[in-house]
Amino acid sequence: MIDFHYAPTPNGWKVAIMLEECELEYQTILMSLANGDQFKPEFLAISPNAKMPAILDRPRDGEEVSVFESGAILIYLAEKTDRFMPTDAKTHKELLEWMFWQVGNQGPMAGQLSHFVNYAPDGQDYSRNRYAGEYERNLAVLDRRLEERDYILGDYSIADMMAFPWAFIAKPLGASLDEFPNVAAWRGRIKERPAVRRAIDLHKDRQNRGEVNAGNNSLLYNQSAAHFRDLQL
Ligand SMILES: N[C@@H](CCC(=O)N[C@@H](CS)C(=O)NCC(=O)O)C(=O)O
Image 1 (spheres, rainbow, N blue to C red):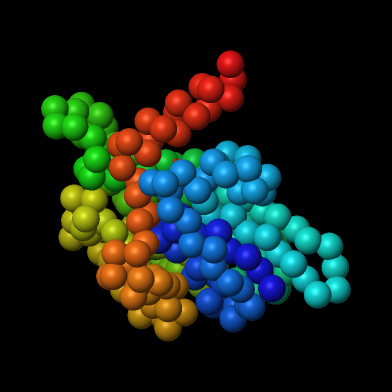
Image 2: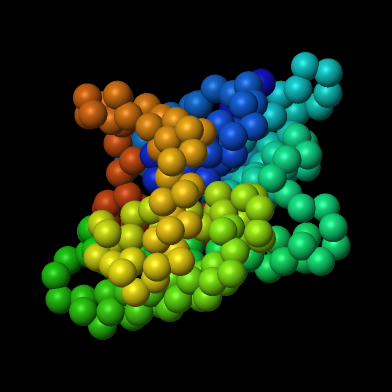
């Protein structure tokens, strides 16, 4: 059984998609980021950066393993199941390149853009434009990569699961995919996968009833910074 510490955000969806694709046995531990679940000692014990997603794998016949950072989690699950990860040396090298591209480029730029689109006070045009430009630059990088392929590595893999969620929400982030037809087609292909639909819909009933608060508001971000300042004192 895998404990999946989760809130319904793009970073959470990456892991939800892989768990659903592999039909692994898991239970979600739904987090309220706005209420500070990420700072609870039991969560920090498995995710020291105080961010979800994180997992605790509790195999019947082995030792418990905790993993934080979405990319590390997907690689761990791909190695555990032997699925969605290429084994030949050249494509494996490309997998690492695109995983690192996602966590070092697309993810942080999209996350910051989301903050400025959704939560920052008005009058932050420089920052918002900076992140919008970087988000679109990353869409352009992905679009070029998809010119002659259906998926980032040719076959569907964890590289696609990493990059899909932030492209999935391009419109709410204020970006159009019209200029990125390869990304638009790739997004459409992935969106129709049953496992992806199940992952995105995880706890949707509870979200609709207002019981789930992913809660990335500006208060949360300020709390987060303050929490770490306190820890350093
Ligand atoms: N690089 C991390 C990013 C994770 C991340 O930013 N998680 C956000 C939600 S999408 C979070 O837990 N935020 C809580 C906070 O900032 O206090 C990953 O890919 O796992």
